[in-house]
Image (cartoon, rainbow, N blue to C red; front, side, top):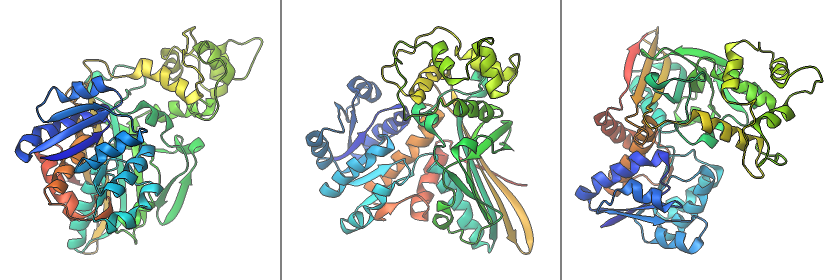
Amino acid sequence: MKKILVIGAGRSAFTLIRYLLNESMSNNWKVIVADYNLDLAKKICLEHVNARPIFFNVNDKEQREYEIKNSDIVVSMLPANLHSLVANDCILFQKNLVTASYVSDEIQKMSDAALSNNLIFLNEVGLDPGIDHMSAMKIIDDLKLQGAEILSFKSYCGGLIHPQFDNNPWNYKFTWNPRNVILAGKGTSKFLNEKNICEIGYDNLFNETEIINVLNQGDFESYANRDSLSYISSYGLEKIDTMYRGTLRKVGFSRSWNSFIKLGMTNDEHIIEDSETLSYFNFMDQLVPKSKTKSLEERFCEFLSINIVSKEFKKFKWLDLFTNKIIGLKNATAAQILQKILEDKLSLESKDRDMVVMQHQFLYKIDDKVKKLHSSLVVFGDDQQNTAMAKTVGLPVGISVKLILNGVIQLKGIQIPTIKEIYNPILKELEKNKINFIEELI
């Protein structure tokens, strides 16, 4: 019986673990679900005969090494900064590794070690990154076979609330790790626009948006996502004019989020004094210029150049920013306080469903004619556990594990799913799970 070690049983792991357990009977697997929250691990396993939920502390070297040594493949659903800790042990004990996270510098440095130990470390095999790579590469490879010259590639993805449950002024609820949302976009975003390299710093990122329409889901706005330039060579598009990857939100979100940046509320470096006993009101009072004659709300609006009777201001008032609610977090940064404020108001409720939206836009030349192709995906969640985000992150990870264990994927080294051997079988099984793209010639 082959043993699969899944480290991390958070919200994105639900569908992954259920998939592996459903497949375990026919494939003769044991699935070890390891999490710091043992109750969560037990809950997600539902006393399945092939499941072994365990308490797991990734920083416990002895336990970590024991579990990795006694597994056949490891899936890390930990925060990205902890993957290298697991990966080093996978090298030591010669175990394959699968993650949904971007390839970090630390992981990339293990390329030679993975190859020499005949291992595959398959990364970026979730949603974004993951399904975006696979679906894009399928079209790119097909277009190249037809003799097309790809001039422009734009890719957009967003995790959002289902339209029927979009019931707050932000038109948003957390569908994945809230901390990642709070810190998203930090650093400089880079992309190629008509052969010009563009760089946008975090302070301006949410000012630089564009509007797109996806199927019948209406308009969305996009802001640049990380470093698009690094995927030019990964996608084999060295001669392309435009290469852009963006994150989707409902229209108006970016402008409001930019206010948090201006206020310094996404700063995660400096501790706010007395944060445990500080009220929301007093916290906000520290962030805007003082005035002896104006109220906090008036100063807030003046600093951000918004009208106190506008819909924009109502978004912030709805968050209870000007009330005497107590923060209750000890030694917290501004970003941690913002996360607490938003989680109180923007978390999924028990009956809520979410939505994942993705679109690729291709501009290409074939037979001396320039054509446009849009490839779009919309996935709806079933409930608060089997969310669209959990499906689109977890299913490709789970399918990858099966393909590696069954010898379908035989590649070695540090890999992302841009190769047919990886993306073709995964996309085929995703289609069976109603995760499929609709292509439109524009």
